[in-house]
Structure formats: C-alpha cells, structure tokens
Length: 330
Image 1 (spheres, rainbow, N blue to C red):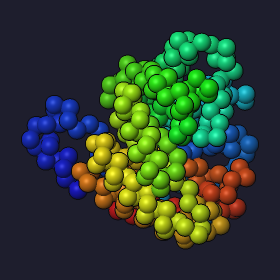
Image 2: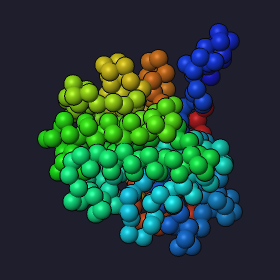
Image 3: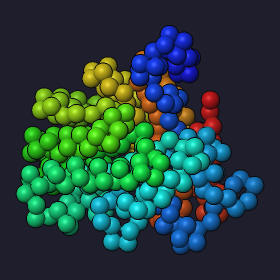
Image 4: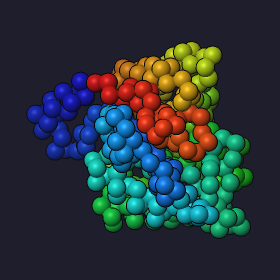
C-alpha cells in the first residue's frame, strides 16, 4: 500500500514538490549500540547454518532495513561517542540501511529513572545548557553528513517521559524542557530540514500518560515530527500490553496528527516464540495505523547475547532466535 501511494504521487508530479521523500516502506529496525564494543571483544555472530557472518548482514537477511544508534556526549570508554557512531553509521549506511540517531544528552544511559547531565555541562546555566544541546546535536549530525550519512530520523532525547538534563529539564520544569527539546529540533533542521525529529517516551501501553505529556508540552510550543514509544511487556500481560500500545499509537496519530513509531521493543530471549508473536503483532499493528502514520518497529539490541541482557533475540551459540523471523514478514 505504501509503495502504491508513493507511485501514485510520483505519477501526479507530487514527489517533485517534496511531498514524498525517500523510502516510504515500513521501517523494520534494530538498535545495535553495543555491536562495535562486542566485536572489539571478539564476539562472533553466526547465521542459521552456523556460518560466521557480519551481524549487520545477518540482520539484513532477516528483513531488518533500519539501524538505530545511540549517542553519548563524552562516554568514558568512547563507545557510543561521536566517532564510534559515525563509524557505525557509515558502515550501516553503506549496506543500505536507513539510519536513526538517538541523542541521550548524557555521558551514559538516559531513561525515565536517570537523565544525568554530561559532566562537562554540569556547571552551565540554563542559557548555556540550551546552547550545549544545540551545539552537540549540530556537531554530531554535521560529522555524519560530512561522512556521507544523513539520518532519516533523530531522537531529541531518550525516553524523556520525566524530562532530560535534570534538574533543569525535568518535567516539573516543563517550559525549560520544551526549550531544550526545541534547541535540539532546531539543530537537526539546520543540518537537514528533511530529517524527522522524534520525541521518545517509555511505556507505550499507557495512553493516559501520553495524552497528558503531549497535551502539556504542545501547549508550551514543543516542536517535533514523530511520536516514538518503547514497549517491554512482561510474560503475564504481553497480549494486553501490545493491544494497549497499538490503540495508543492510533490515538496519538489521530489526536495530534503525527506519525508514530515503536523506537524500542523487546521480549525475553528465552521465549523466542512469544517474542516473534509480539513482533508480528506490533508490525501488523503499525502497518494498520490510518493514513500510513505508523512508521516502523525497532528491536532494542537483538544481538546482545554477551551483554548480560535477557531481552535480546540471539542464542548463546551466536545465532539469531526465531524471533527475528518476524521481520521477514511481507
């Protein structure tokens, strides 16, 4: 359907007006932020036949068409810093993957429970903090562009349900949070106006939380293009949670006129059939969002079998589980 719509628009001459840009197919993605570090430690990846192969090629062979990479400001060991991200983005882009860049605005993990400022920004006043967000965003994206990679999507913040760059950008300081987000947005568009800016929250099953968050921040003038969600259901409620998330996606698209995307999803590697069923359901749910506003589904770190993380989609022998077959669906 998406390709058919694009073809009709081309025939009507609308693509030349910039109404349709790039790949309009559903993004079937994987976040592989750990991959370069894993490879440096000697981790090997194998296809189903047991042949050693590039992890990105294995992902591609399973239907993955998009890669997500996180960016930390000054990580202690360099992994997920600007240089590492540029290297990985060049590699993925050369293989034909679409690229998403996820700015954490921290030296390490940022999520609803922690949004620590980078050490270098700790003593900056709010005016300088806004400049920091703009400059860092612009610097990383400009480095990518100089190396031939223009991301299709950029997250301004990671799971910023409770804000970012605490305490200045906490949700309790909502006006300041919106100003920080808008600095990131402006930097993205200054690099390339066609890059789509995502605001990413956790707990995609909670419609009330999403309504409350976006109703409030939109009143304060927040700027973005796409609503991104995380979904990590538990064994006992994955069907209910996935139903709620799909309903939430439909509501967000209708309520705010924005496209929606699952930026992170994961289930237990020890239960690959349920994981596959969940992924198929979410991919189909995303495709069913009216007006083509469901843009894609990204698995968070499927390859992470050596990282003490139990929600990947790889076996201990270095092969993908059947969960990854979900992305092979038409």
